[in-house]
Image (cartoon, rainbow, N blue to C red; front, top):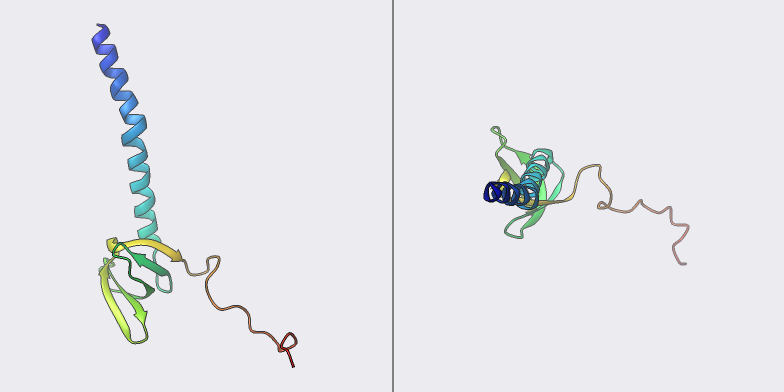
Length: 104
């Protein structure tokens, strides 16, 4: 009887320490991939950094512009990280100055 209780306790411990966090990370990654859209600056799992310029019809392939006139077609699941989401914090050029701060 005590061996059954020990077995259940070990399984419960493994669930809370291993399985549950892994499922949470997988759900977060799936949400991140669904949120990737045109204009986002992304890094692929291979280390290529670029801006999403197009999403092909099935939605599983995106075109990433890595340089002027250089676009790569990659599977959406190859996106490892969204560096700067559209409308997110950071990124972009600073506001243009009116010249008042420029030295003469």
